[in-house]
Length: 171
Image (cartoon, rainbow, N blue to C red; front, top):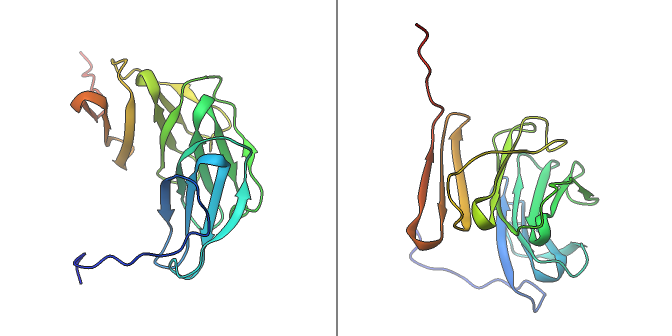
């Protein structure tokens, strides 16, 4: 109905939930405080606790397909799965900032953004993360990339950052 009606679904938990991502109309994940990762395979009719990653606050989740995903959270946490969320491995960010959002174009290229203007970029699925300059110290809260050359980040106090590579002309 185009968003006219929203229907409450039961999460089965009594913790704050911060981020969600669906790879299709039926399969999705939710993350929250207490290190919670919830999973549905029936469009949210039933949510089950898939994993708990300690007492950590997880802010965002992103999957490129039903098997490959990432979650980010406080203290520079980045976790990766390649088995649909059954197992998660830490990918070192070498930061202590909170990380608020994650976005991937494919299994290899992605970005993570967070506190104090943090922008991290990977081209190897998160094996290595490289810091990128956002020219701000404001907290960054959400990122969306159309492709590897066009994207936006929003943050505290009305900040909007647009990404597009600088074209350098050769003499």
